[in-house]
Image (tube, rainbow, N blue to C red; front, side, top):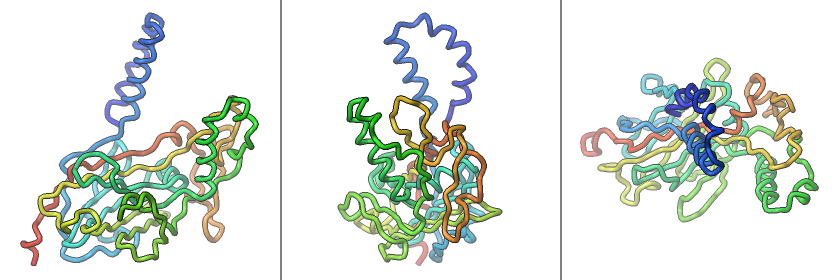
Length: 298
């Protein structure tokens, strides 16, 4: 998030003048500052290299080492490559907090085939647990109720929320279907895997067929934008302020969920920071240019 540190460093001087502002001006000021702190990072002119052989989608990144780049703002390692049939996306996440958000609240790879930053098509993997989605739905419905009714609602937020589902993916906007949840073992053309490795961190690979992005099945002359956006903690809107949201302890620590085999999610990563968990990690790779034409690689 460019400029966030600069905005914060200037905060002391700016705050001294806040009492001189009227309520309307203060509201405008606050919105402007928050917008500056939460704007997602964008990288332009990303090049996708051509591959002679397909990438094996196993989540290991063994074929990506020399091509992975690092973005300090989002703390994501990323790479994009392609062949005549598919676009491949590789990610590596070493930061504990970003890992935590992905493992608990999921990750969505957004695709804009016009080269802008619109969420036209999406691949969500991993996806939040069913319990997490149910609590999120109830939270949104509860916001429309009167305050007394909200306070009377059962407090589901104290329940430990399990880790995101690593066995299913959600396709958004493909084949004229708003949302479709599939097993990653199903043959949908799109393939994705993620591993949580002790010495490496999270590693992620995705394959998207070109003909599912562009009707003519060609990347020639195309510019694709990819948005990498993690899920985040959404706090219920209650007045007490004492609840423990979604597996969080009152002091801000995380009560770890357990994955398969009884292993704790994220290898017992340290206490979660409540404020950071409420922010999505966002990175847009805008206007990706595909190197090499199909005719050059026959």
